[in-house]
Length: 68
Image (cartoon, rainbow, N blue to C red; front, side, top):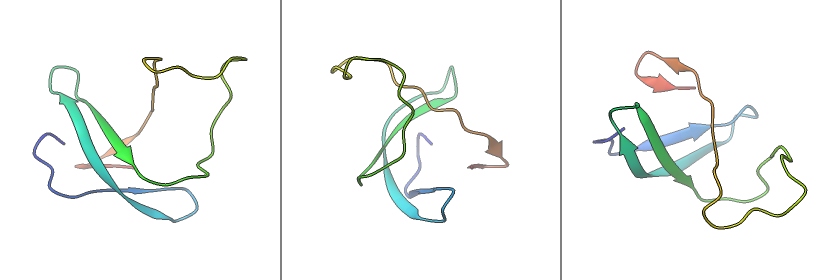
């Protein structure tokens, strides 16, 4: 992801979104990406609204050199 020129995210319903790599960490093999859009599904994890600086996690399954 660190040197990625083009990143796309495909959702379960088949929609494809372009994503921008915001940051990477090679030590932990993690990347932060930004997807522009709205009405994304979500899971309610708290009774209070999120605040700037709150943690956000995404789980993905690697398949070869792609993330599904």
